[in-house]
Length: 488
Ligand code: ADP
Image 1: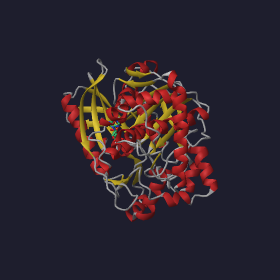
Image 2: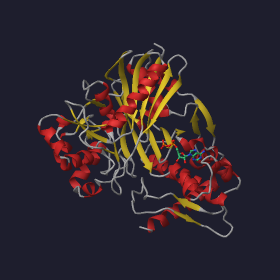
Image 3: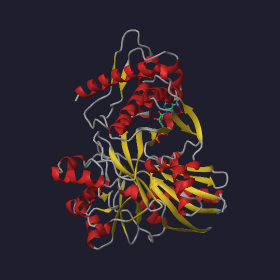
């Protein structure tokens, strides 16, 4: 067999990539955009049927391009988004509740101290509307058909991975993997099973949840006209990117500069409980061994650059931010805090709002743009500092996501972290992670060989001469953050 398929079921699009096993690279890709709906302020929904149909479409597209010469399919997917469906007909019961949806914020806020502690101890998470438990609870409380199906023993509740596998296998497999399960707020990351006590507290029966497998497991078989293809290897998108970036040893991590900023660092075989506002995640489970990670995210990164372009009209294209920022030596004392919708980790302050500080009559467009780019690197520094404070020494920083194309930003990041920032040859780390898991699950490779799948691209080395200046810049940024927090 010549190819593998990596399916990346994201939030705004689903994409399938054809991976040439011998050449070790993607040779074809198919993409379909996904709709999002916002029925009320703060609510985010998606059409689960659309996610499945478009995933099936891009999958078929890749199979055609490969002439059916495909050994298996690996899946990476947006996490937390919750789907409820009928086990007998495979039909969704209601719209999928998106990961960004805040409708369960009050439910989370009302959880008592005992439950909050239990959630922290068992799941490594901080209770938040982000995670699936509240979304499942909301559907059970508000959708009569969901309750009816549950009573009849026909209800399935799962994340996008489970939903896709169920439909791809025509209901033969109702499964998930440890990384997706670990984002539900129902999964015990120590025993690697659904947590009996949490299920009880949230009144969610275990029977409606999928079976949990390791990331390098077989998840089912897709029967198509041109053959039967195993779904082999699956992980949530951030963890798939961690794998695709070859971050296997403790202290190796990746920073994704997408719409938001996602920082994930491997922390080794025992979970590290963060004391600094990060989450503890299951990094992956392969070869029967678990590896954990620390995770932190900031809501806005590339979206701030997009705002410069679309909201302020300061840029004609995102890439122009680099040339413009490079036209000035520094931000001229201007600082920006991208708290458009509050601040995420480590501040967890939804009321904070974005601000520019230090603006003078000498401030130009270039200074503002540079301050925005620098703010992205400062956010990452805050999160990486948390990783360090939690006792995980930072040994390697790898980057991906749309804004990692910005060389100035990456160099600034390296100077600010005092660590080399490594931008890989293959930009699609998430899809590469899914392909690697697939190869592993099919026995085409072993764990020891996985790091060799990632090819280095550009290395941004920290400039020791700039160390002092960057530290002063960072202290200045933290003052601006204090001001943004005062707004609340
Ligand atoms: P996502 O997967 O979260 O939708 P991407 O990883 O595709 O996001 O990254 C897109 C984001 O990256 C956009 O918000 C865009 O503003 C930003 N971006 C793209 N290119 C650049 C660039 N050269 N410099 C700075 N930001 C950029």
